[in-house]
Amino acid sequence: MVSEIPASILTRKGARTTAQVPPLVRQLLDGGRIETKNLCEWLIVDHYSLAQAVFLGSEWVALRSKLQRSGAQSGGKTALGRIQDIGGLLADFECEEQTGRILTLVGEHPSDCVRAWGCYVAVRCGSPEFAGILERIHRFAADEHSSVREIAWLAVRPLVVESPELAVQDLLSWVCSPDERIRRFASELTRPRGVWCRRIPVLCDRPVLGLPLLTPLRSDESAYVRISVGNWLNDASKSAPEFVQEVVRRWQDESDTSETRDIVRRALRTLKKRVNS
Image 1 (cartoon, rainbow, N blue to C red):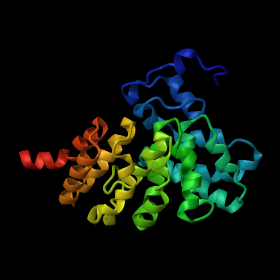
Image 2: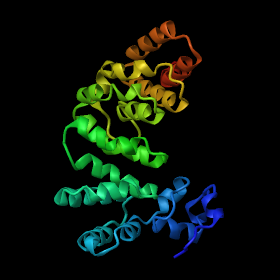
Image 3: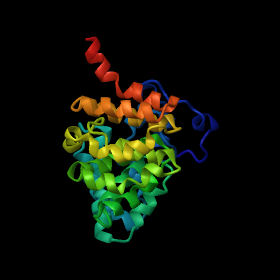
Image 4: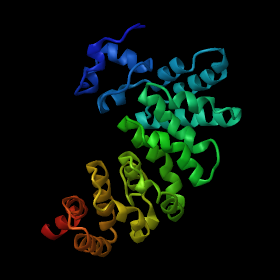
């Protein structure tokens, strides 16, 4: 094991393909010593080797055994699928112990992949109320690493599919947060169609229910947030075009800013393609 991480590793840009990820980088990623730099690195992490490295010590013997069995059955699963499996296994173990040790350990870990597991622990262990889940997921939604932030909303998404109106109400304070990551989380989590996730049928059919979250963001200073809001409305335009057209007309009348225009351009892109096709 490398005792000191070379500066060249810490300042690397990340390989362009998974095959080009250097062996030392792979070793450090699987040992939980460094964060991934890009998607190529994220895809090649051996999550089960990483889990064995994280949960050392006699107190984790039973957990390591479960992780080993799960790893043996993980062939063919995607990186996201492995994160979900390990996160679920850790959540079950945490719920049995009720000590909070696992959530603390993974939540503070230097590896973004380990922190990603924590998103599923946060969702499943503790109060089942949506407000309580949001409180636990907050640290992951605000994580410095984008991969953790993406896993955070993916982990919560199934609950929004079940109760979208409750989710919108509980997220109202999030769109007023000074942290752009928290504001973006509220928008991305509730996108009617989203990416790599289940649709939210209620918001596809009645996107007006999500408007209380979007309106405070209609002229957001953060491009990170604006992209999400524009994508939210573009999702909605595929099933409720009249709604989106009305919203963008009203926003342009009430908020004539470059930020609002930026959102509108992204929101209308599917509708413009239909007109031009």
